[in-house]
Image (cartoon, rainbow, N blue to C red; front, side, top):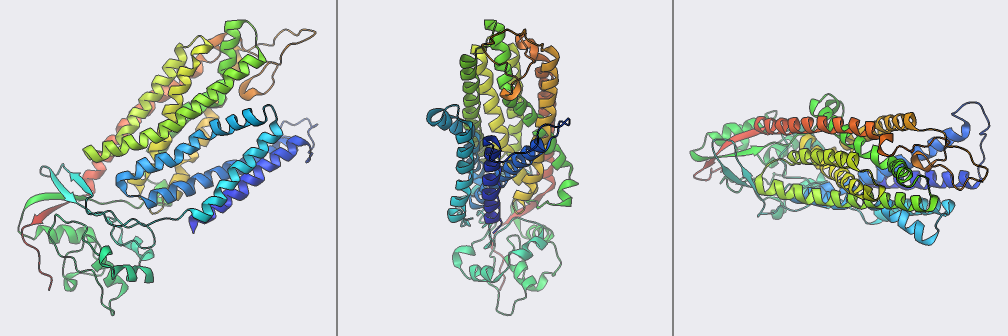
Length: 518
């Protein structure tokens, strides 16, 4: 139901926001603009309407990511999530291409395209998007190492959604939400009662009697439960039961389980891991958005430095090409990092957070490339690398958030984490603007000007910078420092994840003979 509410909210917010901006642009809605204050009623109204479009976009992407993450097993989650959100990275290229082909230069029709093109997909999603619980997969194998040598635990993928039964969640109280009448029906299905650990040759009797209490049902159905019902205390933690019971058997091979967290709400905000991932995303997204939001100004500065003057037609084409290149790189980066993260995780057993360092290094390379470009014709190199790095960031960190904080409250958790790009982009872009304006000057007025100076974001301005890369090179130095700091934090995040997995690992022995529970 949460997914449907998010999609409906996205439809209302996106449609309202873009249509309101279009009506204001066409003059259908007029607001006072001739006041002495900068924040006139017209500006405040535009800010509000644009905020609606931002909220709608966040609602739509959260719904899509939540449904995707909960419908696919961990083995493929990063790949599928990356493919889904790659469309988000492709949106700028898609809409700009359609507008250029069918109504070039017509801003009113372009705003109508945005209103319809962004609000109709959530309606389609309401009709077709469903969270599909995935069945246990007997061939799902996870390598386990680091506890007395290497071992393998053959596990079944947990059922996600309202029919959740198999879980590696050590928070037993969270399961209260899932044990409903539908759960009782699923427990009677033999396909849902396969053991979580096939290698640990234990018999798990999981069919509750008609008189079983809900607390007794939770104990019987927990994947780590292996003791007889008479020996299970109602308030006993399943992790303690697994460790004590499994180690009491006659075994000779070590294996391990890694418990999965469920952190949300106030507990999330108090978590140092949350602020760590928040800081990494702030530094990387701020770097990427500073370039993306100001690539028009970078293009203009290089073009004027190379040609001596600004040509509106030729310059606009180069600016549009940089937006398209960045958008395509963004799309490919999201899809590629998802597949790479799953391949890396499934082959080595290492956590996906290790790849965050690679993304941060890619961002550093992009800023170094941008700093070395003096000819506007070579700017596509920087745009490509920035797009790949930016897409890789948003394709990887949602899956890292699931690994660190759990899947049950993923939408809420990712919503808190997603605040960081909004804050960082404004800080970095303001710094860019201040640096750019410090090197800009007022052009000499001619009786018949051939073109209008274009500043950041394509807004006409009397200030224009003609110094080439000197107009913004200090901003790139700032982002290089930010990328270096992000690399340090990402390496530390990998170390934190490794330590956390060791802390949450349950050491058990593989029994030689099945334990008779009769």
